[in-house]
Length: 464
Image (cartoon, rainbow, N blue to C red; front, side):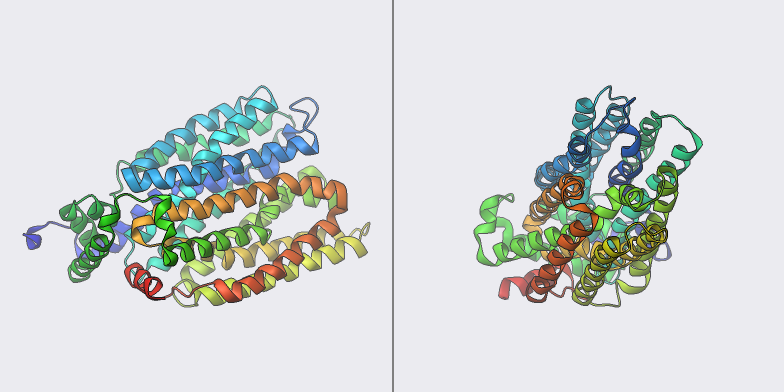
């Protein structure tokens, strides 16, 4: 019976799975655009003739999306386990579309905060679900690079946001231009919605729902028949081990080895935010303005961060993901980014007022973004998509990303306040010290997942 299943020709399978990945990662693209667009639009919406934002309200407008994302990470992860990854992505596309429109026409800061809160619910959903979707769709030999496509689309979304901010902010000398910057995100939301009618459900979720024939079709469309048959067998064996527990719940994390994975996952997610990447991604324009750039010059200069973000992710995705160990990339990246934070802290104090300072700082921020997106950024999402056992994968990734978004919320909310109280130099020293602590923790908790199937990883954690 299995031999009679019609599948995509062998020479087109790689192309097919790449198409699936591109369509699914439009969710990640929206994640990137919606988190990146605030970097340039904030300066315009804060003006007196628009929303007249104080530093406190700037932090609240920026971080409201992140608070929504924290909630969304938990809600959607569990729903994705119950109703499927594809179905939930379709719902998230609709939320993206309407929250984008609502935010772009907001008459005051309170309506904008509500719009960005709902946008955050969708961002939190795709942040957890898209890596899981890709990890469950990908053959083990290309899983690293395919899951990293999620990170690639995030940084491409951020880059487009920076480019559009730079173009619109310099071409149109009107304060309300921020509304158009935000509204552009409606286009990829429509593409994601259409894409959910094209992409298949993941074989692991189909097998859980006792749709093994459909699961086999998906597997044979994305890998050779022999590997597909073996993968389905492994998936069914793992499902059988978990079947007595029913649908995933928080009670599952009382099991010691699963609790250990959850603690590792949350710690990885939180440390990724404490590294400081979103200081650059949300407030890059603000940092450059404080070192001496004009608003228009800062908008253009900040595009460099977006370009190097894409370049770093590209290098990891195509050259490092399947060649370098996850643990080495993580710890090495953390060491470098922490050093850059310390350099910015030193220079912004001792070179304050010098005409060369803005150019030194933009060079440092570009280096920071480049290395982070070549190491910490993609490795974080890759590890989260790999370490959790099948039965609780959606919920586990959701809880871990909840921790990530709560920390992201804290960084996004408090950064402008910290600068106001302590100044730029001391604020960067705070993050540099935190970075050192994270490096020490990483030596003890980061697992090595390279070169093993998801089922092998689960067995390894179960025995440890």
